[in-house]
Image (spheres, rainbow, N blue to C red):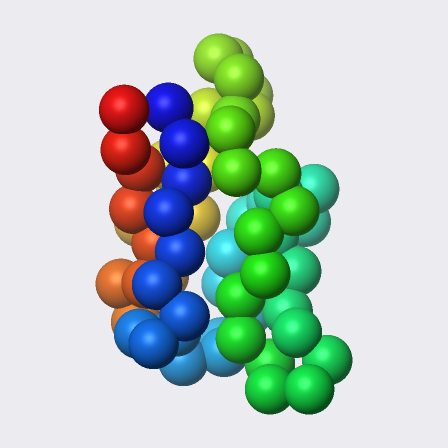
Length: 65
């Protein structure tokens, strides 16, 4: 699995960062999502990635095979 971020849809709410600060950050210039770790491994990492996708208000995040 890998995380895909569509910065055009990102609203900069920071929900992904709150859920998984090891995988996401916000760009200092525009506040939009920055992927720090695009390929979560099984277990807790994958669970946090799924949660981040679910809470993203702009639906800018998705998981792909």
